[in-house]
Image (cartoon, rainbow, N blue to C red; front, side, top):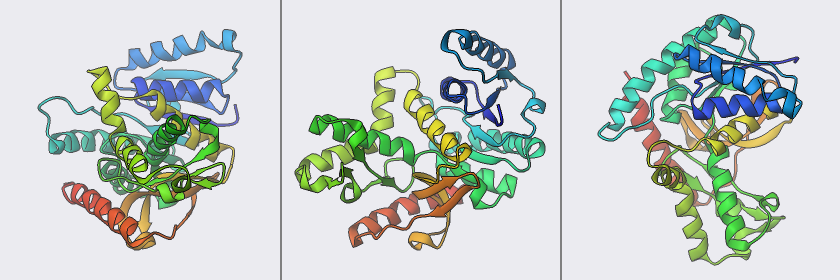
Length: 307
């Protein structure tokens, strides 16, 4: 392959992301995990599917960062999931330490790479990675909005009984309960969503979108979503490596856009070979801007608690 992608974290999200990238022959993939044998085993298992599925990308795994050298993109999924009895501050502290360690290794071996963060709390981990790497905002951003928007699109599809392919939607803001679905900008084959659904049905979709991650966790009982998150990370990787210039909602570092400065917040962004190539500013209503400001304030609170 012409490209190399590193995925840090060989758990469900990381391994499935690696699998999607390799099966699409976007790049050779290196999986790194503190549990090196697990990463090696999963990589071998995926490679043994190659003759069946007919892909020629190579997948390797282990606990050594040396094979990641020269990666075009590094996707960071490593981190702890929040467990019963664990406070948000505990999770933030533990994943901050993990993210700092991971980013230091990645930057040492691939100083020109593009970083895509998936680890939660997402917006705060993007800031940790920015501080540790010193990268410009074009080369560091987070996967959240693609996932949240995908959930919204599915729920619209189910409500209307139509193909998901006909639906576009955007979710802005932080990755959490304060995210801001924008039904006014959601369309069904170009038709604005408010022309097709009553306001109460739209609000029900918005609410389910905000709680989409928790809904999955409640069904699993032990664990969180990974099929949709890995598909979302894959879409971002494909947009960059194939230079698609695709507009996707990403956690991007804002420098005055939307009236927000010095924070990673979910906004529409154009992704291409240079990474984050442009932030798209939508015209928001007063209510939409107010919701986004509240979401940004929640992100600011998290970031302010970083040591």
